[in-house]
Amino acid sequence: MTDSLNPEIRITQDGDEIPLEEVSKNEENFLSAKVDSDNGDILLDFSSRIAMYDFARSLLHEAIYGISGQKEFYPLGFEGKVLVVDGVRLSLESSRIFISYPDKDLPIAK
Image (cartoon, rainbow, N blue to C red; front, side):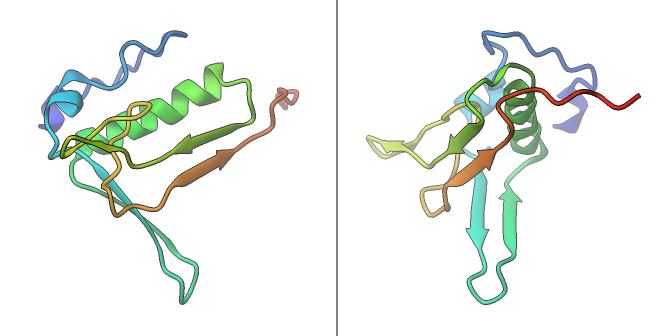
């Protein structure tokens, strides 16, 4: 499976390349996000490398083109199927994932 993951990642503004067709069609590619209430640890448990790849590409898309300062990933099921939302399929038992970032660019250190 990992042979099909292209190390040269292209992210367009419309994001049509996310998710990969394999992730869309195969429900075996998912992320399960859990919070350990005892110690606060967060576990991102990917069922496959391709699921992790698309999650990373979704984050990269947000880093490049996002304007709101926040992003939410959440589990969504419909008619017995777990759906892909913003390039990520979260298992129904997953915690939601909230990403917060500055909504304005900071100058890049040289």
